[in-house]
Image (cartoon, rainbow over all chains, first blue to last red; front, top):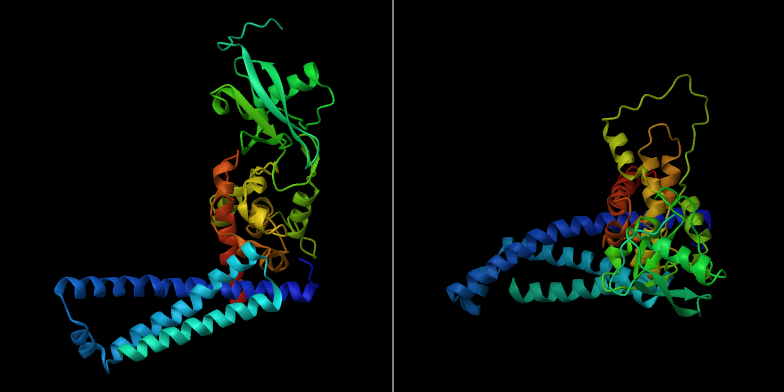
Length: 120
Length: 246
């Protein structure tokens, strides 16, 4: 791996924690995506207008908690997966890889929070 | 031995065999078609009857030693147990060295990187420091024994290593066989190197690089499931890191 023994153990720990984070976020995403899809299907089938939807979500702590969890899970899950793709397909490693991963997480979190701001 | 074997319509198999090193190419040969003929039989015929300079590797011929693996019509296989009738239905056969390993010459690859990774994955039994007063009792039905049993029959043929896309993308990746071996030892209750081994197999060149595509599973001639072993290592390293042991 081209690393000193201490660094190798450190990399092992980082990968193990990223794996845990990705599995836990995947659990959350499975539930969130299912609920989200069910809501979308319900809204379109019932012909609920955008104004009616916003009427229900504005100021709703349930909507805030649900979409807050959804966005947090996305911001955690997606960068970890894309990190692997960047490493394998483009050959990025080291600080560049980790900074790109963190930047992507921050970007997804910001975009998600902006969307929540428009909804809740 | 008298040749009583039936032959196909032309009685001849069109064979392409890789010659030279990495920059080599396929050479064409015509080999008599025989009943129950294996790919290793074909390669042996070429070397003994047509061109003695052909380099290839084999030993046991009965699927035990793991030395005769080659790329057959694009897929890694153990050639001694691969019947021509199963892989060359149209009478054409292309035999090349295993992928993901340096080609020495013709069909021979350098297996050193493959086995070096077994060593890097701590793929050897590590006895406890203190002498043991009695034999370890390992019940055959215990979960750990069954988990070790599931992966223990690996013959080290490197078919899974050649079939693994991750090895192709990340040359540093330990690969399915070394990780499978590590998993059998993680489940060996007599072994004293668990923490050290888990630290060795975790990380971006270890079990966490596996995408569970199961190329290894679909190609393993012994029907082992290295992906399951790697998944076990991911769980074991997760628990180890939660306990601060990684």
